[in-house]
Image (cartoon, rainbow, N blue to C red; front, side, top):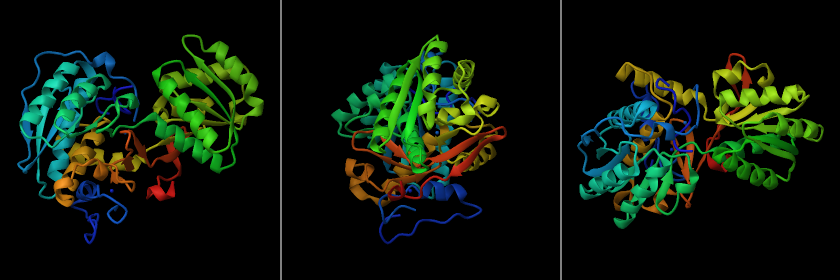
Length: 410
């Protein structure tokens, strides 16, 4: 996985002694930016989701010239595939706009963004990272593609600076390389924890036989075991859904909940295959991930009442409204990642002194609050998000459990 929740959609937490800014009518966004505040005393990402951008990762035309946004003293590299083909390039342009919007909405940020186009390639990312470092960048935001993250990290580590990347492939996270994206592990952990909390003990799963399915499978097994549950069936499918669907359908009598984790079109086909195999999906609690945030899912009779984990949608709605006002167009879903990354580094530059981007600052266990809710970086570079639990209904997702206000509540 390399992108975030909505790659195909072209439209689409104050330091000690300093109180967090409030939400004013003029500065809803300012609170969002300034609300990315660190530490326990400091604490104040839909139609297509979390799919791979690989198909769009080839360059389309000449790379864009480097650009600068902001006039602060703290230099920050921002690497995006601005000239990549297809929707990846569109997403990158929207993310660039969101980054510039964060600068505009953060009151007097001491940040200068050094914007580099990697053209969707590891070579471009490495060159952009080298340029940003040579120009004095103290931290690098991006890149977007999983394949480009190691190339960026290689350069950044020689300068002992951190990278906050946007890939959803947790295998590219590591020492000094933090992922701000929506990771499927967070979705699975949240939905299993919620289900166990309401009495579900026996779980089944039908997952795609691909990289995403492998990540989900590992997270599912870990989460169920940690909650003292048991897995009564787990099957994976490729082109043939019917055979694994029959195996799962036959085991559902011993299960309380069934996890289906795939994108909108595929999960509808999977639910249909289970029904064709004789499963009565109304007799079991269906569970999903943020990939379920899709009109096809909401329109599926077989998936009605299913529960999935996702960010509280109110944050993105408010962000989208401000973005439309400023740019006259819809943001891609990944745009909040660029916004939050810039707002975060601006807040840390203001509050954390010379250690502003040190690993112990970035991995503070209390985390930060952004557009899509609470998040924190783990020392291994992955992240944890405070997600809501949503129910599938014909009119869209309906919240049944809100996102936590602090990680102590999770």
